[in-house]
Image (cartoon, rainbow, N blue to C red; front, side, top):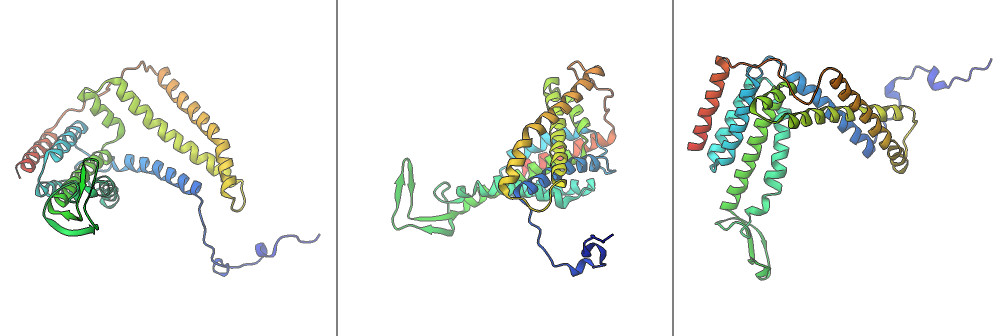
Length: 306
């Protein structure tokens, strides 16, 4: 019988002998990979929050109170020096938590750049914030007026405007950093329990919990469905064909995730859920929790007084 096996399967070619080909991912591929990354981030948060660190061992209710207190203090502070001190204090807490600070600080920095620098950058011009010239931006042929605004001939960055944008950037950066610190050092169920102790209504807590579960289930369903589809395809497809395949499965993905979500809810009902959250154990404060709360309170007072 004639051998019909292709020669490249019979030969012992090394991987280096094949020509280099650059793999190009479509927009849908990148979106699915981002969705998978979001699911992995959930696993990462659950893993890092269980690590043995000084901040992880503090009562979640104390961390929640500290989060609210520090966010208010950072928002009320109007001094760049005090914002820098707050950033240093938050960085010191990150060192005690033994987290991967590079990843967390990168997320906080990106959010601060978008909302605290890019959006607020026009406020540093003399059109919005008057002040002393720092460096010029643009020079017009003649001054003009638009509605209730007067546009001068020389448009430049002012010292007061730069100070305002810098202060807004530091506020957002510090607030997001301390929020991510609490999130990455507190498991989600214990965080919900802390909100319960704070007096948040049960309906709101259940919405948060079920939304958290639904996002997780939907992300996993999208990833599994797309990988199953991709494994049955050979070669690259046109973007129009990919959109047709994805559009035809949107309803299927939604329906499947809905069924899984409803099954989760029915399982909760079968185990006695009646709409009220019951705390199986109250987390009592110990000496370390009281010391941590006192340190945060004292640091907040120092930040305000600077």
